[in-house]
Amino acid sequence: MVYLSQDYIGELPKTHASVSEFDLSSLPRDPNELFTQWFEEAVAHGVGDPSAVTVATVDEHGMPDARMVDIISLDEKGFHFGTSAKTAKVSQLEQVGAAAMCFWWQPLRRAVRVRGTASRHFGGERLNVWCVKPEHFEFTFLWDDRLHSDRVIYTLDEFDHWDRIRLQR
Image 1 (cartoon, helix red, strand yellow):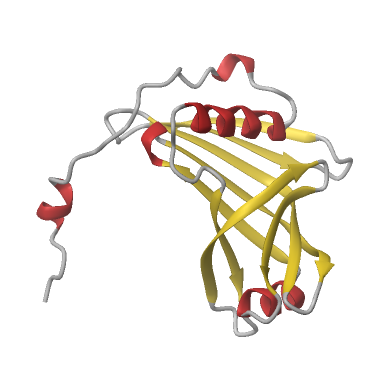
Image 2: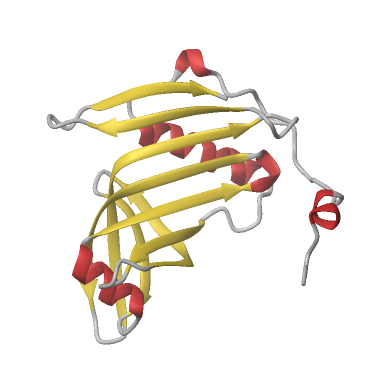
């Protein structure tokens, strides 16, 4: 049984705003600066809940989990978000110490994927604040034809310097 057909989904309206092109010739050395620029553009274009992010973890059996949270801040330590103290997310972050995050600003056709180590920055009885220190960023700009994209990947090397790779699809 098909619940949502490919034809039905394919015919849904695609809403997006025209924004500046992804200028691959003038990328900052620090991916946090590019993230901040894209975040501020999402805010300026009225993207709903631009601070919403999917946080992905794995359980003790290697099964993935993903859920939506809001980031509290981004600083030199990483992305900070709050969560209830007694959740599967906290248990998984404690066990594995790593997480992935994915921001999707659909109207702008932009996505940012982040992977890194996770640590607790505040642990209360009800609320925990966690930080994901990025070791990998991937910025994706989807073209209007939805078949092509520009991507830039930043990876942190052993000397805490960011390396950049530009990919086009």
